[in-house]
Structures are given as C-alpha cells and as structure tokens.
Image (cartoon, rainbow, N blue to C red):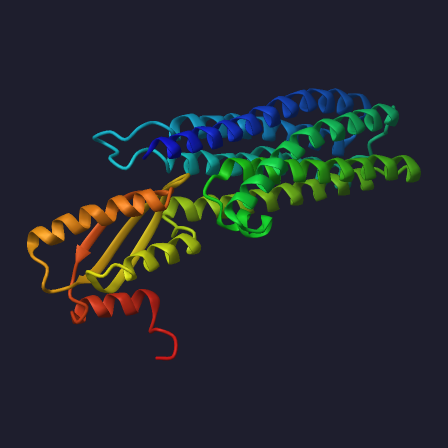
Length: 333
C-alpha cells in the first residue's frame, strides 16, 4: 500500500469513527431521556423507544470494536490481515438491534394490546422528550448521510448503488439505525397522541409493535449485508471490469481465462487472475511480467492489495468447465 492509500484509509477510518462516536453519544443520552419519560408516562411505545436507543448504543460499541480490530496489520496467523473482522462485529451489531431492540418492542407492544389496560399520565413529558430526541437523532443522521453522500460521490455512484456495494458497514449501519430511530420517534409520538385522544392503550401498543417490526427489518437488511461480506463477496463490478481491461490490454497476454476478486476488508481487494500468456515468453520473462503486472494493478487501483497471477492454457478442458460452471456460457453462446 503506497503513502497515498495509507492517507486515504486513515481519512476514511477517521470519518467512520467520528460517525460512530457521534451516534453512540447521542443514543446514550436519548436512551436515558426516553427511559425516564417512559416510566413517567407509562407509555409502552416510549419504553420500546428506550430499548431501541439502548440497542443502538450497544451497536455503536460493537462498531467501534470493529473499526479498531479490523485495522490491525497482517501477521503470520492472518497473512491477509484482519479486515474481515469489521464484518464480524458489524454482523453482531445487527443481531443486537434485533435481540435487544426489536424483541423488547414486540414484548411491550403485545403486552399492552392484550394485557391489562394501562393508564396514561403526563403525555406532555413524552412529547417533549420525543421532540428533543428527534433533534438529537437528526444531528447523528446528518453526519451519517454527509459521509455516505460524499463517499458515493467520490465513487461516482448514486447513494442507493453505493449502499448496495459498500465495503465499510459502519456508515451504512449508523445511517440505517438513525433512519429507523427517526421513524420510531414518529411512531411513538403517534402512539402517545392517539392514546391521549381515544383513551385506548391499544394505539400505544400498536406503535410498539410497529417499532419492533421496523427494527427487525433494519436488523435483517444489515445482517444480510454483513453475511455477504463475511462469506467473501466480489469486488465492485466497476473495479473488476477495470482490472480485466488492464490485463486484456497487456501485449504479452493472449487471453484472460478467469478473473476472481474478493473483498478482504474495507478498501482491500484480493485479485486472482488465470491468464494465457504468449508462448514465446521464457520462464524469466513470465516472472518479471507477473511482478510488473501486480505492481501496476496495485498502483492503478487503490483498493487492490493482493494480486495472484497464474499462467494457464486457455484450451484446458477442466479449467474451461470450471469457469463455465461458475459464470455460465458467454452471452450469445
């Protein structure tokens, strides 16, 4: 990794850390306010929102752990580094949102709807706390959105496409959980307001169930993202096409037989290429060419950190069968 790449990685890591720290501090303060308001008002929706904020706070702790541990350098036991550890801790963060946030909200909602009717008291306290929480959550949400918008613009992608292909789960997790938090606050406000207007606690319980459903959906989306990254997802298709064009344009290469990439962490891509070289090249020529290509790929594509190039004959039937089994026949064939 060259000096420019180190600088960019440090900058990106610092931005993610700032986003996570801001979200964690905001969530902790909001959790305390919601808990106090929930105990005063007796609102199940408010207590569900308190559990929501506690889950979000725990999520930020896990994300900070992910950021710290994934930046450790490679060693003998982990020669490709610890980049994928970020995905492991981020997966645990998604599980925590469901286990501690969604499950408590479901419990509080169903017990309110089907249990003994609950009297509402001091709803004004709930409204004030919800308004304060909305303002504080908006600060965290704006920071997460600012980072995602800037990073997506740098990558030349729309925000939706960037979030789908992102290899750093921290800003996506914070953005999703903050978006869910803002929506949850509106649901809690509606639950308390309808309870006050109708005198029925069913509305309060229904708001809690809706909050639980919202959290379960966010946990599923984040869990699916990190599962794919942990299993070993292909690099950004734009990067893959760029690498293939680079190899195809090398005069000494007659054909790129197979090209595999895998995300090894945030901004860390492993490249494995099987290529058919010009048969006139000597063994020494091949060695120097492979070293040169690896250096050029590393220099041209910032995310490429490991390159393996294997000389193969494109006519080998077993290799051709393996490639066809993985990708299918070329278009038009």
